[in-house]
Amino acid sequence: MVELRRLDQEAPVTLGEVAALWPTLVARVQAGSGPVRASLVRPGHPVAVDGHRITVALPADQPFYLERLTRDENLTATVAEIAGELLGVPVTVRWVAGSETSP
Image (cartoon, helix red, strand yellow):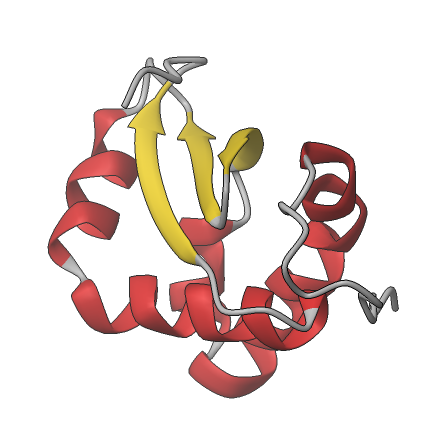
């Protein structure tokens, strides 16, 4: 399991950092929220980071994932909380379809 501890908490989060911790994040979602909720997050992959906002792409050909996650504020908050713990800085999470990355 990957856990990053950032020395400079003011420095922007990088996509590489988020990608490295994504499997650990999914495992922690499963441990804390169960396999069904983790199954919503698992197909996602980080595609962009803007400051401390992480953009996660979900399968464009399966809109169910995006619909569920954009409506499930608690799960989105859980993902952001876990990512923040792993990165050592608070972050927010935005879900998008496919590889869309525009704000």
